[in-house]
Length: 312
Ligand code: APR
Image (cartoon, rainbow, N blue to C red; front, side, top):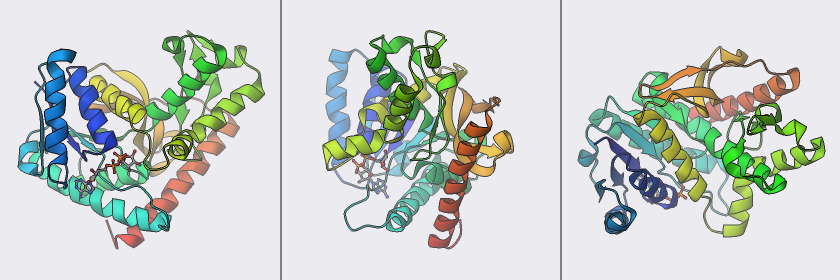
């Protein structure tokens, strides 16, 4: 059985553990600094196993020793922005948490593939790569799958077609500047540009850009976790089953799309070695400019994080 470590037993971490086990992908170790929470949630999920029908072992712990030799490490540890907290406060706190988690886990699982979920996503993925010193193929951020799933859900709702037939491609950073690409978004092969007027497509793209904020607005305390959890499990499956799936993920750009030294959402192939390759597509001038703008904003945040952390 493969082994997946999930660091952070909060809403997202626990949902990742649940979906990974329900799909019978791997044994799962959930780690948190809180005592009792990872243990309690894992035991609860073990008790759901006879009903859901899987034989994955789930354990919760406060001890990193249990994570040894993981095939995949998922980082969801962090805090959400609270009232009165600046973006820099959040950046500094989450950067320190992610750095610590990356250091502790990579010592025990040097062959693991990392999937980073903690926000700000693209910056935290960059930090994980720098901290673990792993090849870029083994450090990937989860955001493109989620943002694309949101766009797909909205397309399905708008047209009244099954979401099983909707596919979408959302590139760029995981934030306001993400770049939904309608040309590459289809219903069973038919580009949505053939099915909807431009103003409706733009409305759905805008709702996608605000997808996370819309949920925060409704939940008040806390942010989304079902779709983020499902997105991580989808990536875990692509990797462990060596599926070679073409998925938008936060990956390290080293010249691709004219971008350099930045983690950003691009179409990538996921399989057992992690991120096998970035697929370069011809973008329009407008799409390229939007991607560049998004990358510039991520780079500014990486610089800011470096200042806040002194150096990474
Ligand atoms: N080591 C391990 N776990 C930690 C640490 C740490 N140093 N610091 C915090 N945690 C744990 C918290 O104890 C908590 O259980 O991380 C968990 C975070 O869970 P939630 O607060 O429920 O947050 P969640 O909704 O799961 O979101 C986690 O994913 O989507 C992103 O923006 C979101 O960055 C956030 C992350």
